[in-house]
Length: 151
Image (cartoon, rainbow, N blue to C red; front, side):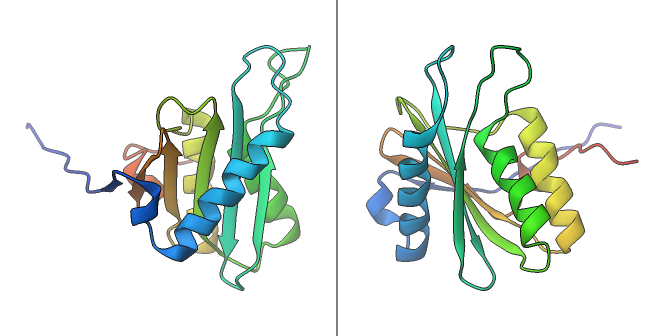
């Protein structure tokens, strides 16, 4: 039986079109790119989250000489939040990169971890993917990974 999968998302031609809270979160993600350690790919990624309490946190990617020991910005941040703020649900996650020639989308592992966090906290995470002055936004990571892994 053939089925159709329809995924809704928002696209913003300019970051100025985002609401103020999302725009500030994107700015934090952009700032986080400056702390990235990316001596091999030269692709600096920053991520920022807004928690239900209003607190914002950010992290960047880290590449290691003993590849694949490095870690993406999103997973670095999500693991930190889960270890330190597990009872303060994540409402939104912004992702930015430098260079920023196109929007920065999470890798497959990051997509699965975002979905895992959504399941644990029992609420969706708004994901804001930015680059080249524009943004694509989904209201849940499940829209980025509709066929998720489940034990």
